[in-house]
Image 1 (cartoon, rainbow, N blue to C red):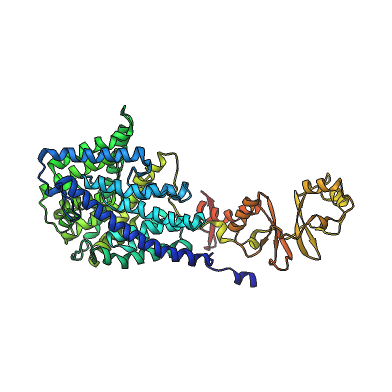
Image 2 (image 1 turned 135 degrees about the vertical axis):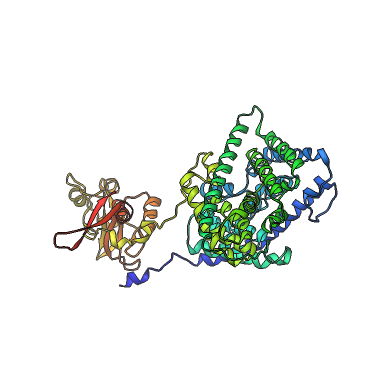
Length: 591
C-alpha cells in the first residue's frame, strides 16, 4: 500500500519551477519580438511601396506605383533568396514545419542566426507584398528565443523543447491576442505530449504575453464581431460548410506541393526561386492590390460583409494563386493569415445561400474551418476564432464546422500542409497522441517475483560451476547479502575474476557504488529508459533504495506485457449473443 500511495498523477519534479520561471522570461521576449516584427513589416511596406522611412501602418493596396508594382515583390524575393543561401537555408518556408522539425529531429536547438534572419526575411517578404502573415515567422522567432535561452542555461532536451514551444506560442499570442488558442496550438501541433512539465510553462508564457501585449500593441479582439444564433437548419449548413472547407484545404495543400515540385525541376539554383514567386505576386497584385501583404484590414471587411461578391471572388482567385506560387518558391512568410482571408472570402460568397439564418456568421465559420482543417487542429481553430472576435453565438457553428472539416481532411489527406513538408525531407510524423502503456503500469505489476539469487558469501569457483555452467538459465543473477542487494553478476565478470581469485567471495567483486536497480512503484517507462541507458537486459527490483531488499527482477521481455492490455483495447472486438437460456454472453473476436 505504501508503494501504491507513492505513485502520483504526474511525473513532476522541482525542475518544473525553474522551467516555468524561464517561460515567463520567454513570454516577455517573444512579445517584444512580435512588436519588432510588426514594425519591421510596416517599415519595409513603407519603403517598398511608398518610398518613405516610416513605421506607420499602411496597406500596400494604397500604392500608386502602377506597373512598377510587379517589380517590387521580385526585389523582395531576390533579397530573401540571397539571405537564405548566404545566411541560413532554415529561413525558407512558413515557420511552423521548421519549428516541428527542430523539436522532433533537431533536439530543439535553433541557432542565433535563424533567430535574427527569420523575422528580417519575413518582414522583407511581407513588406514587399508577399501574401503572408506574421504568425509563422514569429512562431519560429519566438521558438528560437526560447531555445537559445534554454541552451544558455544548459537545460535538457525536454526542457529546451518546452521553452521553444513556449516562445512560439507566446509570439502567436502577441500577434493575435489569442493566448488560449496559442496554448491549444502548442498542444495540438508542437508539444507532442500533454504533461505538466510542458503544459504549465507554455501556459504561463502565453498568459504573460497576453498581459504584456496591450503595453506594446493594441488591446481587445483583432476582429470584434457579434452575430445572431443559427436556427436548427444551421446544422446542415455547418456540415456542408465543413465539407467545402475540407475540400478547399485539400485543393490548396495539393496545389502548393505540386507547385513546389515544379520549382524543383527548374534548371536554376533555388536561390532565384523566391524572385520568380515574387513575379507572380507582382502580377497578381497589379490586378488585385488587396491580395498583397498581411491583409488584416481585408479580413475585417470580409467578416463584416463590406465587400461585393464580385470583388470577393476575384480576391479569392488572386490570393490563392499568388500564395501557392510564392510559398512554393520557398520564400519566407506565415500561412495563418492567408488561410483566414481565403476561408472568410469563401464564406462571404456562399453566406446568402446557407440555410439556418444569420448570414453574417459564415465568413467567420468558413475562416476557422479552413484553418482547422489545413492545420489539423480543430480545437485551436474554434477557440482562435472566438478570441479573435469574442462572438459567443458563433461557438456552436464553429465547433460543428471545424469538426467536419477536420474529419474530411483526416480521411482524404495523408498529411497536412505542415507535415507534408517535413515528410519530403525524409521524416515521418505520427500526429496521434495516446498514453504510453508503459506509463500506466508499475514495475511491480509485471516483474518476476520468484528470483534465483547468489549469496555474497559463495566462492567464485562454485558459482561459476553452479550458475554459469552447462545448465545456466539466465545471463545474470542478483547477488544479495543478508537480504540486501549488492548488484547483478554475469558470466563475463565472473570469468575475468575466476582465474585470479577462484576461492574469493562473490561479494568481494562489488564495490561501494550503488547498483543499477529499479523499485516496484516506478513506471515501466522509467525502467525501460534505464535498461536502454545502461545497455542491460535485466534489472533487480528492490523494495526501496535505502534497504535494497530484493523483491523481484524485471527484464525486457516483461516490458512487453503492458502492450497486451492495449492490444485488447485496440484490436479485440467484443459482441454479445443470446444463449438458449436467454442469457447474454460475451463473445470476443480478434480484429
